[in-house]
Length: 408
Image 1 (tube, rainbow, N blue to C red):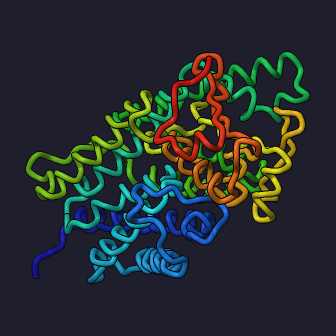
Image 2 (tube, helix red, strand yellow; image 1 turned 180 degrees about the vertical axis):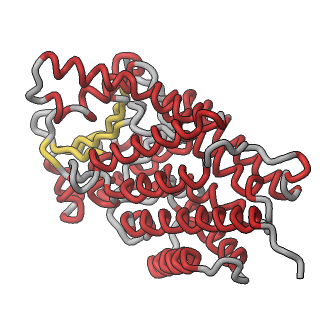
């Protein structure tokens, strides 16, 4: 009997755990954000094309339920068991449909998991070739996440939002230390990505990455401010995955003679382009921010819907939990897009122009809002002076195809 190579056995087992943890993380994320994956909800859907919109609520619910069942099956699927790749293929097709039906589902954790799982469609025995795409995705997440935080927007966002509770009653020394620590965050994330590339420094990259994710869990988790719960399993899984994907001293690239099948190489190149190059275009509004790893970067766009009493009445009871008294316009109520998304869907608002325009159009149509009922206001709160703001009446929203230039 031919003796099985122990190293191949170990590599296959590690790859299997990467697959299982990725499926588990996606499963938990979809459970925590269940409303974003169904169509029977108050928050509007933002489909990519009209052809995939308007499906019956029951059909959308079945797609979501089947996706969850397939994920659960892949978490416990026995190693080497037949049918796993077919199950994964069906799940990926379901996810494609769900993503096309609503761009609010384009959350960074969902995007990352889907890309990490695609290479497992191929019967590849060489672990390094199989896991190359996942490793590149992780490196890109840290590097682009840090690069997007360089500059004024993140500094303002950190001071006014992220560190707000720490600075509320802080003295001058504490304030200086906290703000100084905030300035190191972009460079720390970039450094993690660089350290993970170099075999000799990888153990430090893994250590710093684990500390960062553990810190996020302490800060945002149930023992912190208990907010944005959908990222709790993501950060926990990132700790496990970064340990599995980046063992000490191992080269990331496979040997030339073991570079994987031609199909896997093509898929890997496409994923590298998606995570390595395309995020650059988000800086010019030509690629979605969340698919570019804008994670707490301060580049988030804000949508506010100002409502007169008549507009508030027209929207009805379904919108009451999301309507607040306006702090910006006396006599008005308002719906703030980010708060609305978190309250209704438990995910942050995907704030790209086309998504916000679709949401605004559906809100205007659903309430039958007229120009006497309110308006839609859009800006980048951390770049208000630099990028200006935009304000539209319901009649303008109803007919426009894209937003006009900002007012400065």
